[in-house]
Length: 257
Ligand SMILES: [Zn+2]
Ligand SMILES: [Zn+2]
Image 1 (cartoon, rainbow, N blue to C red):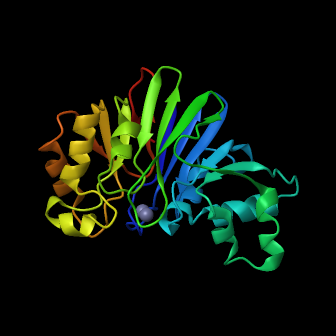
Image 2: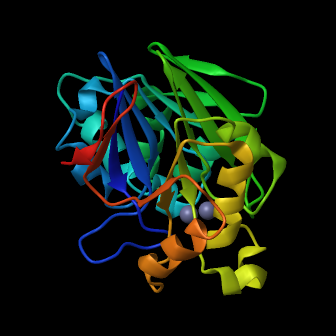
């Protein structure tokens, strides 16, 4: 499996960057986990929009789904009408997206996308990958994602304060993409729906993940400080997600694209 980081900033992008998004490619299958603002441009370097098999939106915050809009228009106005792209999102997500579209566009949303509602306990399959979802603790309904393919397991926290779902999603994963929005000293702020650095490290340690990829760090903070704080509580390998970074799971090493 090949994982490409499309966007790694929390809430708003660093200069030249993008907010949250990850492309997972296994065999002929292209799966996107979140598509925040700025991600589509990076996605199109790696895959054609008409070739995507599914897009998962973990929760309806703009830094996780902003670029589903330009993806919608790319599909909507393509003369081949490559419609029916699977869009997995929390309940009510498509209606929320439709609110800022004109009526003429809104009616195409459920034709361009084949919508599937995600919830805890309702597993899904994309290509040969099994997806399961675990409720997060965040101001809106959201889900951590656990992905299992041929000989590998990956997890993605989405946005969440500490909660049981994070550890269930990440248990024993080969790679855990985990938000670490704030430094350790910001525990009070994080309690409204995010993890501090040390909380992210503690989740990874308890879940026994083999490798930890930190993401969603607010651009106002020094990522180096966050990594050091995570390393004080987590004994495994820690890396910072950056746009263009590539990981190969299932026996191979990763590198920069
Ligand atoms: Zn976010
Ligand atoms: Zn959020």
